[in-house]
Length: 253
Image 1 (cartoon, rainbow, N blue to C red):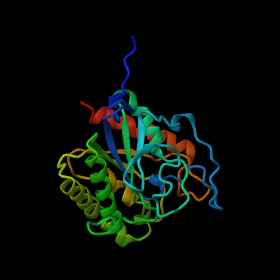
Image 2 (image 1 turned 60 degrees about the vertical axis):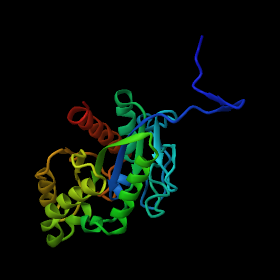
Image 3 (image 1 turned 180 degrees about the vertical axis):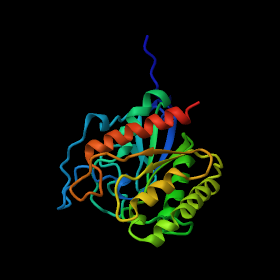
Image 4 (image 1 turned 90 degrees about the horizontal axis):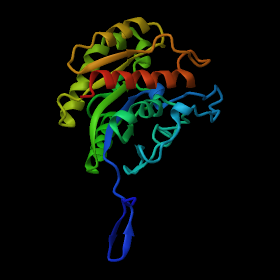
């Protein structure tokens, strides 16, 4: 006989409780919020690769109202300052880890065009990320497992920004861990493949972050959109799988 997950109270049938979630924070700038398939006229082609398909029973996102909802591309739509979003690495990541970790809760927090200084404690992007992460955990049906961070292109524009990148990025990680009371929170940092004149300096800094439980995945060589700054839909799928492999290899018990 097949058992039902529903509950009856006073003759009323209630839906099954939400599944316990492994929660992942997605933060950074526009390549994390996703521009895959968005052309120079800010039109998204609507193409969603199979690796990014929705799974309404196992992949969720924290919506603008801090409630869980079924996740689907564009994952950051309505959350990235009302900018048009396309495919991002988040759904490919979730689909690649779900068979190992169970239900996945994604907390999209990326903001296009932000430098690392814009993520200092007390700024709106940072405070919003912490609020949303705490709200996700407060539902009581999940545990924050990692921060996935893809940012740095903006800091390749000037020598001053590039020179300050290491200190500010390491302080960001320390602040997040302190404010979420997760002193060993894993951080997977994407080493950026694109930027401006100080790209190589920022890339080397990212590879040299000197904090425990911080690992890098290098996105160099992934295909770029026409603007030579944003990665393509294909690249987002590859990157999502790279992030998943890094998490499963480095942090899954």
